Length: 482
Ligand SMILES: Cc1ncc(COP(=O)(O)O)c(C=O)c1O
Image 1 (cartoon, protein in one colour):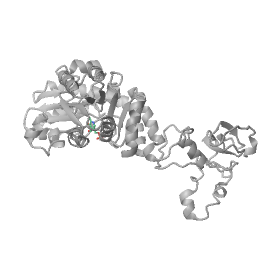
Image 2 (cartoon, rainbow, N blue to C red):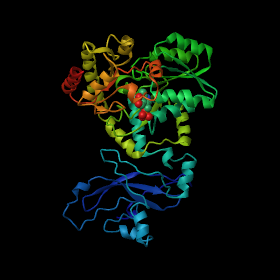
Image 3 (spheres, rainbow, N blue to C red):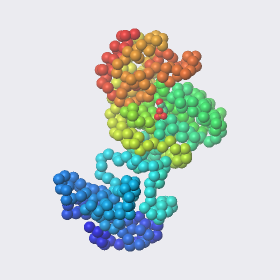
């Protein structure tokens, strides 16, 4: 098979050169190839490369006479029989071959693999300078450098956009990276933000200690205090309102529709950290928020094996954030992107299971004599129960509750549990449990902890996907012990 078998002609202008079309041809060995034709710089030179091997399973395993062709581009001809060596005849030494053979001339992309391939590269090459110039002048799409994009991560971003109902999503190396890059990108130096009291501690530290370096100040309000939000909007030029909903750890809920209306009237953006909800339980953008941040480390990836974070919203805002990310970095690795994609495929199943388990256990705990309070937005006793019912379709897999006793009795309960790991984080397939006072606030004296309502007897139980009956029995036996 050679290039001369194709007689189509092309009209191309210099540097506007990637006219390509696809063909399926069949060789005598019953293997069909999807070929892509490239025409360069108005010259008549044509090259063909395999972009898809469509029926490789037709190769008999025992037929040693047939060597599968390399999917790499060949210079004018498709070599089928042992021609890999000759295509790389410009590489004389093993040391060059180990580095470049099968890669330097380009390789085919297996487009019919069901799973998204991990593109483990930090750099992308251009076949010739004309391609580079075409890319620079925006006539041709290309990747260039890992900080500016990756095909595996691009798949993940599109998947997340589809779930959040967003025009665009940016994935980064962690949830903290996502919220801090978002704040740095969208709040001007000397600007003002509003945020809420109950939130992930590192976010609180970033807002309190890092943003002031840029002259950015914050008003901190109770999650349900709409009057305080209105006052802050009235008295300051607020750029952005940032809040979790539900919050960490007490799962307070913020009325996304209402705060969005109030903020938009005053020209302020609304960004919701939806990590506790996930896009399965809550669609913050459709409720009016401009942006939604997720620590994908939690439910989204869901297997306690990867750190990741993302921001979803309009193309305009995400482009602004992405531009700063191109400078700051915090890039998600392609391997991590693959793990998140893989995890996301069961997100809806996991979250539904976790919603169901948490709801049943929350109800059970509320009636238990050794538990004084349960914090779960799906319970009528929760301060924002009716709001949660309105804006969420499920209430998540985390239940916080207070043990009737002091720190030692609470430790005894936690240590008596047999299924959950004593660990931070939540949203994974394995249940985890901790006392926020010890896990997240142990460096502060009790009096300081209590300012954040972090009491010694509070337990945060984050349900995995284990069976409800086993988890219930485990919790009841641990309560019996104390
Ligand atoms: C609500 C919330 N947002 C953000 C984060 C930070 O995410 P990451 O750990 O992926 O940086 C966390 C971490 O626990 C969290 O609970």
